[in-house]
Image 1 (cartoon, one colour):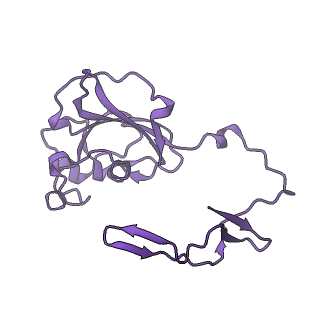
Image 2 (cartoon, helix red, strand yellow):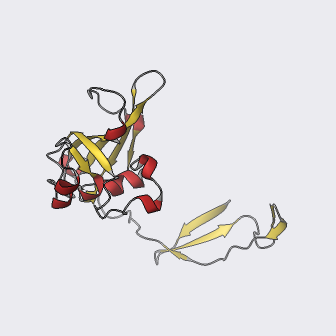
Image 3 (cartoon, helix red, strand yellow):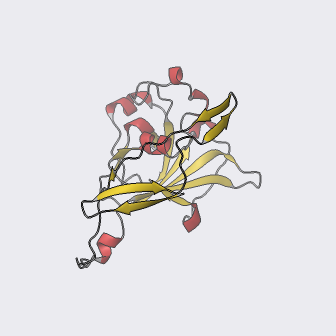
Length: 198
């Protein structure tokens, strides 16, 4: 353990209660010596106690963000759909939001050589927009070409931009709709402990 201190020049210094310089560390190959450099780390920002806090409006307190409910294509053992709740800021591609949150997007096409990496040419990032299509960008020409004959609410995640930075709302996405083995109705709000923010 150690102590992190900030000085008046907005620089942080770390002082350790132990000397880590020659502390042996056991690995599978034997013992290695660890060493940690002792340097000052600049602080990103500090708040001065003398400055009064500005009054923040209620609208600014609620962060802009889009709530997502990602529904898996398979059911849980009790017969209910596996739903993952996330919150992300707008202005991002849906593909990036799903990959950053470890939400299954490609299914059996997850290997790098089986998908185009977001170019809109392979069609493997197919999702079904169940709710919230008004927050999403309209279909692109690539989507219209790749998704001929599919339902209108099927989209390519790599071609969808989710609103803009100050967008708010709910988007319900069915993952891997071509592999979906169940019908369900979305009708509940995400529990507070299941929601994670990007």
